[in-house]
Length: 361
Image (tube, rainbow, N blue to C red; front, side, top):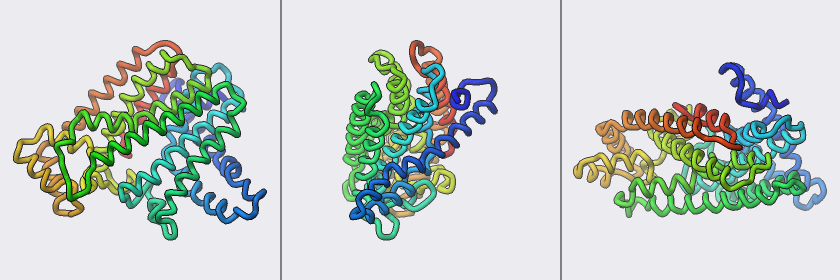
C-alpha cells in the first residue's frame, strides 16, 4: 500500500502513476464519509429534510477540487512513517478530506463576498436556484461536518488535540486574512489604491491563503506521524508559507490572464478592487500618469474600464515581470527545500513545488 502513495520513486511516469492511484483511492473514500455525515437522518426522521439538503451541499461543493491539499496529508504522513497500516492510511485520507471540506466551506462564503459567478467550472453554490443566502448556513454545516469526522475517527488518537488546535488556529488565521482582504478592497465609490502596497499584499496572502493551503496539510501529516516538535514545524512553515505566496501570485495572474474554461472561474479581481499582485506591481512600476489611470479605472464594474486596466498592465509588461518572478521563486524554493534537514517530508515539499510551477489552473 505504501508504494502506491509515496511520491519518491524512479522516473516521472512512476510518480504520476502512483499519484493517480492515490487520487483514485482518495476519491473512493468520499461516499463513505458522505454516509457518515448523513446517517443521522436515519435515526432522526424529523430532520430528514435538512439531511437531504446537506447531502446535496456536500456532493456539490466538496469533491470537485484538484485535491492537492487532501493528497498532501497522505503523502506527508506516508513519507514520515515506516510501513503504515491500511487503517493508518485510511485515517490520513479522512484527514485529507477534512481539509477539502475546510476548503469548500471557505469558498462558499468567499464566492458570496466576491460576488463570483463560477467556481470549479460550474455555478457558485449561492448562485444556484433556491440557495442564495442559505449558502451561509450551508457553509456552517460543512465546518461542523469537518469536526464531526475528526471526532469520529481521531478522538482516540494521540494527535487529536494537535489536529483540533491546528484546525482552529488555521481557521482564525484565514478569517483574519479574509478580513484584511475585504477591508483593503473598498467599494467602488471609495477606491483608494494608496493602500495597495507590497507589505499589505504580503500580509493578506500570508494570513488568507498560505497557512491553510500549504502549511495545514503538511502539518496535519506531521502531527499524525507523531512529529510535533516546534522546530520541525517552524522549518516546515517557513518553506510552505513561501510556497503559499508563490501560489497566490500565480492565482492573481491567472485571474487576469487565465482562460475561464481552464481555471474554472471568471476572473473578477479588477472590477472587485482586489489588492492583487498585478495591481501592486503596476502601482510600484507605473509613472504618476499611469497610476492616475489606474485610480480612475480600477475597481469599476465597467468593461471599458477593465479593458483600460489590462492595457496598462500590458504597457508595463507585467506578463514578463510575472514570468521572471515565477522562475526566480521556483529556484529559491528548490534551494530552500534542498537545504532542509531533519524529520521533514522533503519530497512532499518538492512535489508541491513541481505541481504548482507553471500551472495554468
